Amino acid sequence: MTEGYADIFISMKRWIDHLYDALNPPLFIQGSLADLDLTLIPHASVGLRVVKNWIRESFYKLDPFKSPSQFLTPLMRITSLSFTLDRNDAPAYIAQAKCKHTRLLRKTDNRYMVDHMLSSYQGVTQSSISSGILYLL
Image (tube, rainbow, N blue to C red; front, side, top):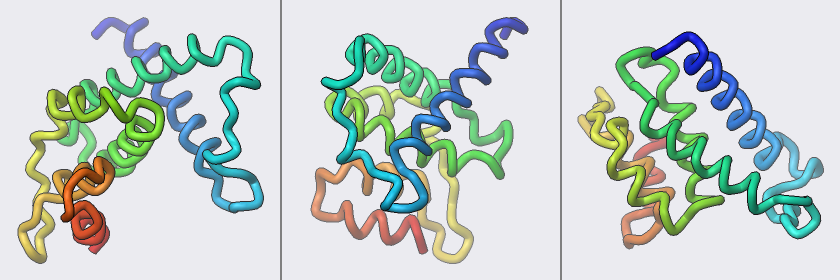
């Protein structure tokens, strides 16, 4: 990876974090995703297209073995954003990402944490709620 591209990727990750924090503030009084009205933002569709590409690229670049202690939080953030902003395409590109095939086992019960988290966000099976609970345990 070239020096310039690395800087761009770091900046992209930082902006994704800012977006996640803005859409998920710590206090309900600060607003929520339900307050977002893209019709009030000039050129929102162009910006949303860029953000979707950044999120997709983040999935492809996320490496659980590069910094294992900083893997689950970024994965959870980009997963949340992908299903919020790009629900139709998210399952396809997440399935292709190498982090999807990471077998992080929870030591207490040998369950795959990443699979449970992704399943809970996708929410298409009867076990989606159970998967979310198992991820948190």
